[in-house]
Length: 574
Ligand SMILES: [Zn+2]
Image 1 (cartoon, rainbow, N blue to C red):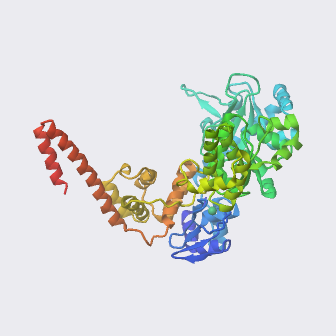
Image 2 (spheres, rainbow, N blue to C red):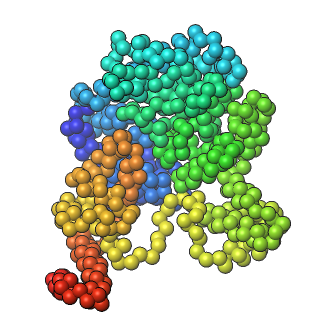
Image 3 (cartoon, rainbow, N blue to C red):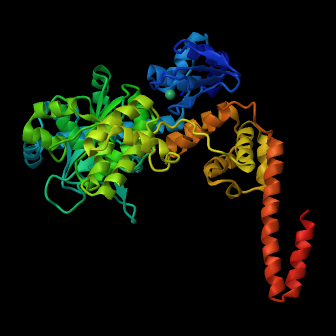
């Protein structure tokens, strides 16, 4: 852990425009600098650097942060290393001090490493588990590379092994023990094939256990979230796959741990899996460090198809090149077993782009021999095509669609133009650029007020003296609750959010919203105090209307005292 004062000094001495300028050609635009984002492919610059706020933000892919965050992403190093790099550049010497959380996390890493060793030894000694590995076609090399192991059929084997070295409370914190009401501990994983889950640096941070017989227990069981493990932020197999992903400029994304191991065993060592959950944008960002090109190879069942749709949304929003594998088998693991690695290789090479996949999926829902259904199918497909926002691509896919449904491309083009506004709600396949919608004055005032509050603690205080988060539009409530709880401003606020989002991953979306707010050009904004007045006016008007309604009701019901009271309240409101 580095002394916060040293970090502050390095930050002050590192000019963000100069630091970023070493990697990105920047042009001055208003108070900010603009360039092509180094983290995603783009043709129009949306990567913004603000010298005033000491922040960068990409309006295309959403990456943002201060100088340290930039170096971390750019050089693929951790925070401490980023501080060192910048410290060296501006000549500030770094002394490390001890930090409690850091040391506690170190212990959690040690516990996971020791448990992985223990499980691996158990696997080597267990004939049943060995036999299982053989039926899955896993070689000793791949078993060793993934450090697979076996949790014995016992309530205390791991506990007994670790208790002389570690405090059981820490082992419980690592997710490996469960505490009973009477205070005793037992092993969480029993009679399961163990897959250590490692972070991209190769440190074990959690486990996933798979049953090896037909028992009724859940097929996979994962460690709970711990201070060092958050499943939406890690990809299984990335530590082994990252080199190949960068070298082949492509990642293969599968659903399960077993698919990853089987693919690596068959030579597809650029394969990773999301950890049994929906694929998240932080997992996507983890991939962008190595490649922006993904082949999705999920299971062919309904759950897999739905997961594919969601993953496409996440990846398309970050401008990934996406292809979808059409497998003649249940999943990649089965594919290798039934048809061999060469067949999977061919399928990967021939995987169609995601737009074609979405169009095929839409067409499959309809009976194209029925005229009405054919028209609906065409409308569905045109909506997907429209959302691409690229004329050349649109024209290409219209040609393709025309061949599929036997309707001339001119007619499809016509109906493309004549249909009303694109339905953005339904297809989120467009990149997340700002789509300006007409705003009323209150919406504008809310937005400007939030932006002003990010830099102004006084304004924030006077806001919370009169308003609750629920008084503003739903989209701002997360932001407001966060602002209510702390008094950081500008880049400090973003920095704090970055730290907090390590513990609470749901905050990373908030960080994006806020840094976008901070860096949006402020020329045409209303000032904070004026916004506050406008919103106070709106609140009063709403109250007035409610009172008028109640007054009318009380009068028609003949409740004179109540009516008089309401009238008085109304008069005091001016
Ligand atoms: Zn970007």
